[in-house]
Length: 114
Length: 109
Image 1 (cartoon, rainbow over the protein chains, first blue to last red):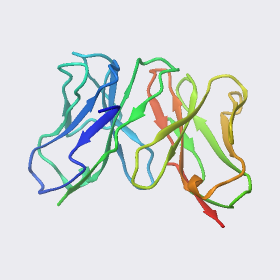
Image 2: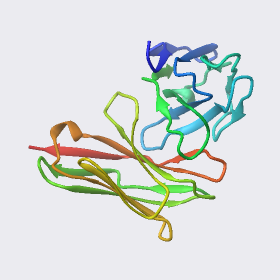
Image 3: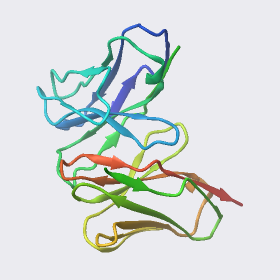
Image 4: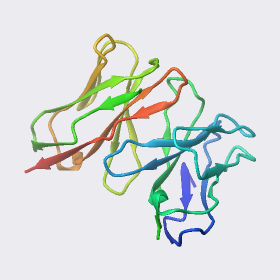
């Protein structure tokens, strides 16, 4: 593989269920990010990780958790899904966290919570 | 609060030139990014400006005025494949990207 992969591509989920969205990158990037994208709104940062072993909260972290056990993987977990979490979720990575460190995006996961 | 404004939608003709504007108010400034996003796909990086002025990259150019909190993306010799959304994002003082809602560009033959 080359770049960032996300799984699943899409998912329909019943409210109250637990769900983990997977993200893997093979670029040895230090920083990784989770965004959600909703119609009419810009990408909003959920959680980020500047390096393996560390995580931080973004603009909209409530209802989501992340872990960064190694460099390559950055899963996003919805502990108990709610309909307002229906969105397209993008994982991204960058070599570092400086101004010139371009973020590269995965293909996205389209999640519907009913 | 932090805010990025860009037009919701624009229409242009194949072969023409179009300018997509972006104004911003953020806590700190560490550069402005433009990304392209085709429908159903991931955003892909187009350009980065941190100093005032024009950056040219083939058919695409990006301009920045930090004093005015303003940027534009200029697309020349438009092609049908340029139909996409164009996202403006500013890196704030915490080195996090603040994103505009995107401008959907429709190219007509």
